Image (cartoon, helix red, strand yellow):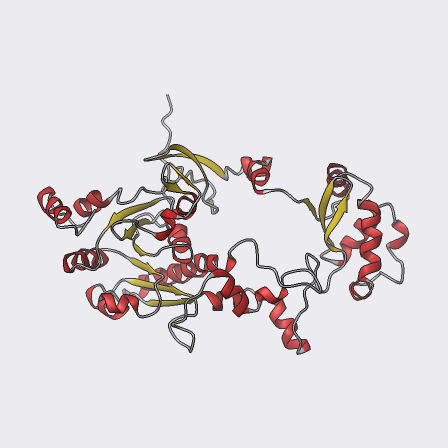
Length: 403
């Protein structure tokens, strides 16, 4: 009988992360590290823990919000207001490779856990601070939330239908950009540390991150000297591109490059438009946006979504049905990629969770561990990482330092 090879934990196996994050931007960053195999020690305050543990809706006391961004982490409850609690987390930071925090600038310093203090204890520590506006600048101390960051970055101004009010992005990208740029900075610093042997402080601004995602939109503004206008689901320069009506719903069609125009013409039975001098360049179609969109919509509105999917697939036209979240997570492609898996939660039992989004060829990774209940790993971390004996752990618990 052939034995199965043990599952590979990931490329960051052996990397330890002390995690002082809460809500979304910071936890999204430490989640990415946990997905890649790092051991993440999530420090939570006594009582309620991370604020999102109380965000409704809840099931048997567990919040959907907390479950969404804390898979694969270990929860340790420590009272940072006590001298003994601070000593514990400093000792833990001395044995970790990475620290991630998303308090307002200055908070960690006031706790005695700032970059300078911990760098002196552990010169190899990579310290990542994630905040709304960064550690410098006139807005550094201002509180920020996703919609505020969307507004301040310029992203919100472009989202929504022409002539209407701006519309917030459905995905909280203002916060989630921290889960992208934080890990990029951390991974690059880990690589640098291999050469230098020293850690580094990383300053991640969520507003900076959203501005970085403006991409060609920012360059368009530089070119024209004007703000890009809202065009709804359409593209400012590419036509046809957007959402078109179907007999039983709607469908996305995207003419991204010149070659796709001919395929769209064939799909809608209008080969005569392929070389029509009114529409034969990107610029002409952009200037005749309403006419071109009307031609495509006249066809799509007479057919069902399934018919259109089959037709556009046959003609190799970029398109997509608009799926709800439930349908998207259960579609054949998501199932084939294993994007939803079942894991065992300490309080809820078997629960479905979204799987890690980065895979490695020829390497089987285990199903991520379920998000922890509050303080689930306190004793194990103190015993296994800090080598504290049971009596000492019991005394710390009796004194209210841990829970």
